[in-house]
Amino acid sequence: MKLGLYSITYLGLWYRGEPLTLPELIKTARRFGYDGIEIDGKRPHGNPLDWPTRRCQDLRSMAEGEGIEIHAVAANNDFSCPATEVREAQIAYVRDLIRMTADLGAKHLRVFLAWWGVTRHPQLATYDIMENLWPIVHEKFSAEEIWGWCQEALVECARYAGEAGVILALQNHRPVVKDHNDVLRMVREVNSPHLKVCLDAPLMLDKSAGAMREAARSVGPLQVLSHIGGEFERRADGSIRGYERDDGVVGGETNEYYRDFVAAMRDIGYQGYFSYELCHQLPLENGQTVGIEFAHRNAELAAEFMREMFEA
Image 1 (spheres, rainbow, N blue to C red):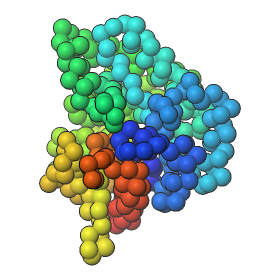
Image 2: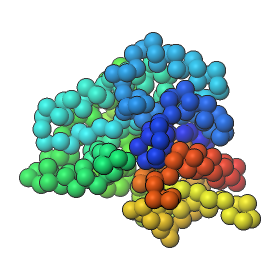
Image 3: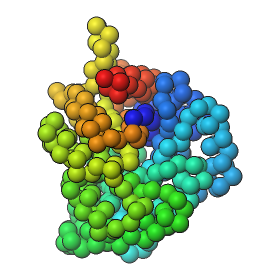
Image 4: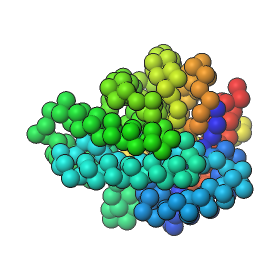
């Protein structure tokens, strides 16, 4: 199993300060001991409009020179919109991301069925505005009708992925997907060798050891990508504690369930990437949102936290 650093951590959305450029991200990943990077498919990082083939090839060469693999690109797509024009635009976006993924030499493009979107309001990012709008936009349509739109779009995109030699990795991310069973249902219905699974532990409603094992066995060899999240701190004894933050407040749930998840992934023979992502509202210090140093500290501790589990 390998460690990736997902560029959304340094997109400049969640902390106070400027984003890292992708060359800076590559150097940061190497400094903290990551094996690769996953590029978020939006500005200022990975919008395909900004990345023609030659520029992708140059970044790939730079990454190879640093000993870092560009292992994945992440789409922020929504195939669920009732407006046909929007769905067609989303298909065009994913097709261009597939081209970019291939040009970067990455194997996988992470995709959603549906996605709320992110807004900057008033300064830093929030999910709340678009998440609250999603049910209103979809309230006149049945779950099966929405599912059908997503399936139709994904069938088309899987065909484009096959032509480019790219694998789409469908994530178990809401709102249309509830759990890994929904992911597997869609993979079966699309029925393409170019659509596989990105099962993420933080998105699972049941994080018990038994649920982790059952989900891992269900996805089996379809699993090609995963993510880790949360925040980390070093205890007095030198060990690292991981925890979740809910609505800007530190909650009581720790990230210890990753131990069960990594063990379950080991049991099914998974040898792919876990990408670290810091993509939620962050704490305040002296009345201001924390700066990029907070992202650096968590990215470094997350790498150490996961390495210890990989080597257990």
